[in-house]
Image (tube, rainbow, N blue to C red; front, side):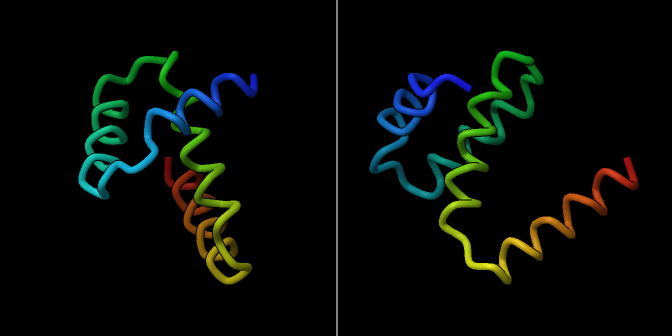
Length: 70
């Protein structure tokens, strides 16, 4: 993934409220457009990098379960 994408998304999301972030995520998912996936990946990368080992294990388990059901 290009660092310019990370930088642009970080700049655009800086100082947004939790509601703003939720709206962006829900809108991207609702639209289902492939070009929005890298942006959601940046969101996940930020979440992952700011999580502790226990949180990472929980997220990994939830993702594994979501993909096994899907």
